[in-house]
Length: 260
Image 1: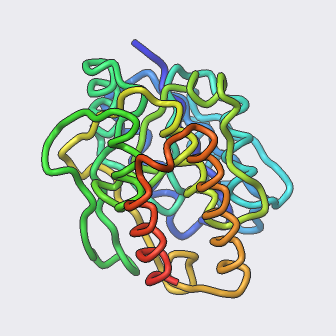
Image 2 (image 1 turned 135 degrees about the horizontal axis):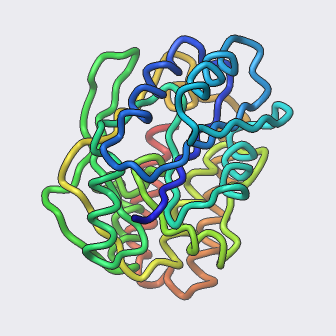
């Protein structure tokens, strides 16, 4: 049974982290390691994690100076032992069959990335669902088009299971110091994947709140967005994919500009 490394960045999450941890330690898939990366929390988040460590020997905790989610995720990748890697935010939670369904899908299809359906909540109130219409696989070019058109949750990071070798062999990590780092990471992994499978089931619960990066915008966010878009364009050019997805890329710009 392949090992799954679940990486959870943590920063002052004491209000929500117990729900997250409970969803992780009750997974039906047994061969997992939970890597909590404390990003300099000043509340009781670390204390709560250490409490769970007493009961679950597969919980790992490491700490960094407060440096942001990107650095925390990169730290998790660097110490992960699993054949597969996924990311869960500390205020989100997953269903009990999350790992089991993703691993089964990726191994049955020999895909490099598995994508799950996800429910989005705003202040704990359900808003909408991002999910593929059916279980299916697609190739790299089709996947990039899905990301650009924000289809089937392809553009999200936390609803995916990655073959760790994709990240390590191609030296893919999150860009530190910038927002929209997920955007660049999504494209980099897509450009190195040959096959991607989608699961027609909502098994990740994504939380947004007032003043989160998802619901608020400041000048740095706009600047970081422009940086990320330029980086994505450079990547698409580098791997000779831009001309294949030019129309979708322009649509992607429009969709993200509407968000801003």
